Length: 233
Ligand code: CA
Image 1 (cartoon, helix red, strand yellow):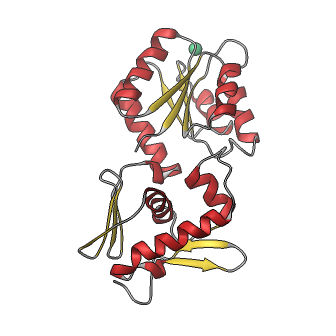
Image 2: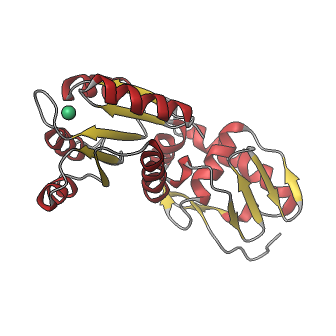
Image 3: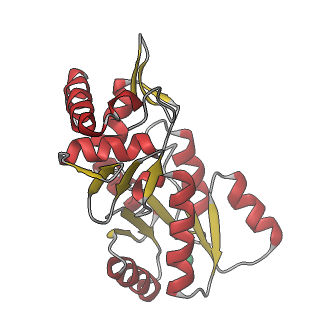
């Protein structure tokens, strides 16, 4: 699945090298040379992950990381710090500023891609290509196919994303607003009842193999994917 990664790096050669490798790995890449440019890009489009250089002209990567963590809109975006320093106290500073991981320069493209994957798997599993199986329900992000038992199920693109999000966040209750943010995307202005429409379609898609009861309505709160259902398919 294509994820949007913002690369904040002031050295053009390194920025280019990272960007080329990320594009090659199937990511959409946004680029900034400093914190100010980064914030302008973030205002326009919320990235799925940020690669943030430590030493930047103007505000440092650490300052930007703290700012992003303090802002409701950007709080959840995973951050990987890039640093030329390997000192222990720098690592601690980075993690305390809210970074999820850090990579010491120089690093290989292979290591970078692996670290990104690991952070996404931990922080935003719905953005990875891992096949998910819960009971007899299976979802494959690469082929965009789902099946219940041995039965292939027809599903629309929005319902697929919704199911992918639910299956990577089982048992947790999400409000309509949270689902809109997570599944439809930030800066998308649709009414909350749109969620109900797609929940109905999702249940319908799961009906042929009797998996529709995984999707529970939690009165006054929202929806939840229950791992166990009384009548497995
Ligand atoms: Ca730098």
